Image (tube, rainbow, N blue to C red; front, top):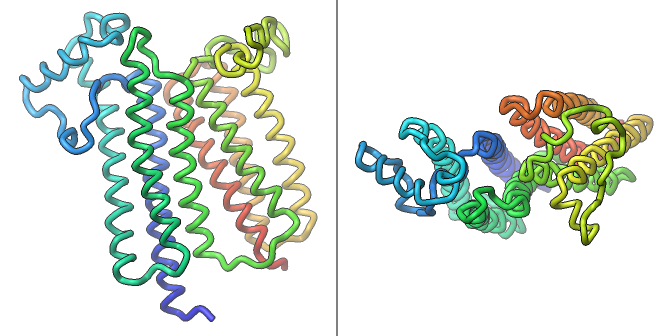
Length: 342
């Protein structure tokens, strides 16, 4: 039996993890805005400790601006930019990095408190250390991504962008999964457990597909729907050598694949939701199904709108945010199908 104090400890740890996950959600949105405003290359060095403070006076601002001028983004894209314009893009990237540091403290300090107070149940500590290590690797991966744009071609690699976003979503998803496990007493595995967990994996891959679209700006090549130009299947699809490389580097193919993945997920979510609903699940599972379908409808609508309006910042950032909401709903559903039936 789990006594009341152990249950209270689990609840408090779950609340802390969900709070950290909420801040990571904000971090993902800010990262998307940083990319959309082309601010990610405004800080050309990485100082995990000494880079906490921004330039504090005019001399420091000019010094920072001069460093930026030495790199290809200024020379090829932003030549003639004023200091005030530089400050605008600088603060997006600075805010993104600062929030990353804050998340590290929000995770580490309560973790150490729970650990040394003996409030973490057996088996959970290694998972929390794993999350902390992933967070540190995410900072390194973020700088690795930025470095790819500080070269002759001032654009970050779409592969590194996808990896950076994927790591953030992975950390977020694991946090939410652990927190729900602490809050919900799961029963025996139900027949929909594997299918709902598979859906979580597919949505994670869909988010990575969106990162490829964002990293290559493939969303701009065919701002039409439901056709891509004049046809459903555009010309020059997979027209690269080798063919498989088109899925990662050819703009037409990247956008086409993202659309097809979305259509497939609509069918999968619909079929899974109908199957779960007919099985007479617990009330919480019914709520999870409804939330999943609402998030899916919102995400599809936002995706189409973002495409037709040629990727405006507000719509694109919202589209990315709702993708995480949809992913969260799938995690919630995967947990809820383990609850006892009515």
